[in-house]
Length: 126
Image 1 (cartoon, rainbow, N blue to C red):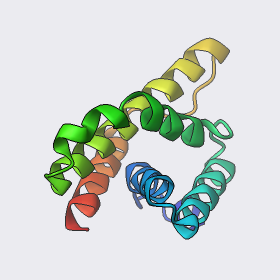
Image 2: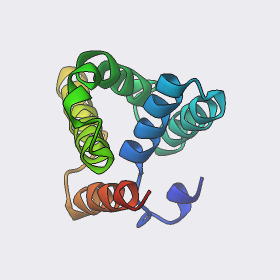
Image 3: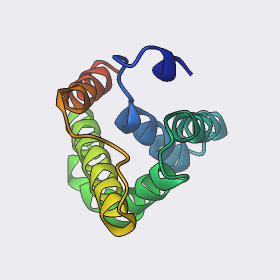
Image 4: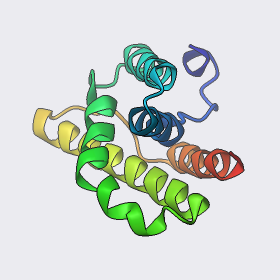
């Protein structure tokens, strides 16, 4: 994984999460497999809690995504809101995991903010 070698690369959790949701919605098995493989590889290489990204993406898909039907006409709005929700829910779950198990998985610094900004920019360019 390039992220373990070059630490300045963004995590792209929101992009892959949107890809997973889009694959589930449209029945594209390739999107689901690529996003799932990316998440498992990311978690294994960065020593993050296992399957936390998949669980957070599925939570966003079940709890929030059905209510975004108002934004389906504006594809850009739907993508940006979904990525913001995905990044926010994942960060919240990761911080909750750290609090519950007294661990330090992620340090909130500018590199994480950079990763979220690049994630939003990449999704807006699609």
